[in-house]
Length: 386
Ligand code: 13P
Ligand code: SF4
Image (tube, rainbow, N blue to C red; front, side):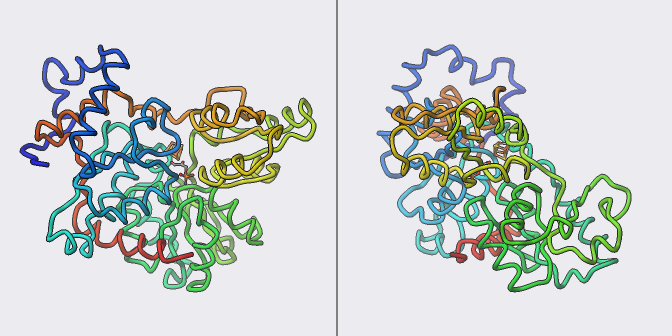
């Protein structure tokens, strides 16, 4: 792919007519055929990755789809491709850039980089935005006044900026996803006395509870509190897992009363949730797991099984369509969808691909070298944990 220019959507926004405007007026059919035309012209040199929360019309045009863990493995393994178009959110594209362009891979490709793009730069993650590197560094300094930070292992959920992953790399820490959080915490406890877990308090708490850690040993660190994240010295001294006060705005919408409502209405129904849900919901569920585990659990179940599923709406609707012989319900009465994932739509995908065809890279994601180097340390530790 011959790349002659590099522009972001923000830069383009300053022009009188946004270049995306013509794409917004096209019918879905036209967009679909134009997307497919570019895909076939690129062949194997183009890899379109999609997270399970993407809308169906986007998923149809992806080469591979997966949960955060599987997608990072795919990016790490990428061999033939020259460009990855990431239909997911910003932290996923950052992770793909770090893994696809690590030194070992560059050497195999005689120095050629894989270009990673995100069709809409506004596709962020509200949870990732709840922990800024300056806040995490300040918290680390503050807690060092009370506890020995040499004995704390920082663990960042993959849903975080690359700078936080780099922080973990520098401080003997690691990255986790929702599918390996327990194995990662076990890894951490083999190396330190405590874990500092960010940015999702729920995944951290639910995982540690399942491992037998008592909630009284899991203080929550509020980055906006005046002192010690809102904790006493005694609470930090007895802590095993210090949880960052962050959450997913989608999964926090599921409530225990929704579980009770479904159990009353459909006796025998099974509750299946993502561990980003709050403890009160996670504790009531029959099964809790990453998006890949949710899909696998439904796939393995016999016809007639009744489910109420607590995760992003597009995935639940896809499961309903793919497994009509099971009775699948969405766990909440209100719409819980990831508004930022939803920003990736056919017009953005088509615009991105046609620019690539014309030699222009739009919305390139490229992590600064030093940050990428240290993030990779934490990501490779994660990929080595089985
Ligand atoms: P998984 O892909 O790990 O299941 O996580 C869901 C999620 O919130 C992605 O942002
Ligand atoms: Fe972030 Fe939640 Fe959306 Fe996942 S579902 S990308 S955690 S806001």
